[in-house]
Image 1 (tube, rainbow, N blue to C red):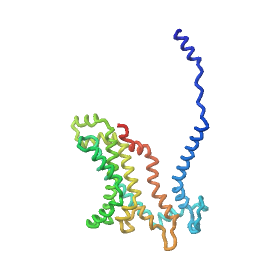
Image 2: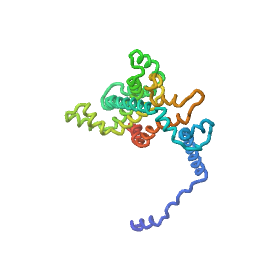
Image 3: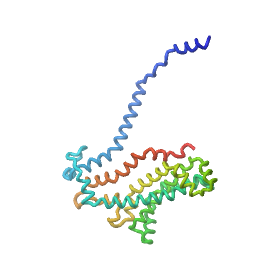
Length: 297
């Protein structure tokens, strides 16, 4: 049979009919999406409740209303927090401490991650394992020793004490992330820079970090979020209200002897959640790429 006739026969073959979804498969798929929807609703409902409570009037809060929608939407709770309750000061304190801790974390974690990924050393897996274990070490276990050390050195109730505490908290995870990300960079780039006479620090600053900017941004964003959301360390080391960070200031916000103003508290929660939400929304791709770095080596 000639090639032309074979092609003609192949062309006349009927195409495969699309597979029909069986009732069992359709029910399983519907059940999966139903469970997914329930999970999403259950995850978002607490934050939704916080938002609608922040929009309720003091009269509704006093009545103990449990409605899912506010009767009269008001933005006065946010204005009250930022003016009468002086919530701007704790926000500034949090920004100063968290940005300083994040900058120091990246400055220290970048050379450490570079050394762990591009130099030969004995026991490197053990060091990386220790760093990973330190990242998940209970924070409350560090409060007692650090409190004694800060009190004896006169650092209690100061910004440096809180910055150092956050540095201990964020440095292990940042070092581990940057080490994983730097290991993906071809060593030829480093070798070419060293052959041209560059030092290792200049190579890190001018070659490695520009290539690994997504990983650096990921480490910085995660470090900032960890520091921004901290409550325990700030509560333990800050003793005067003027030095409180935003999460600690919320505890005593709008409270009286006979009533807790949940609308003011929830409005403050929404305010401090906005920076974290914006970071996650606009940098989610870089966060995912940084977290998955080193997975396929």
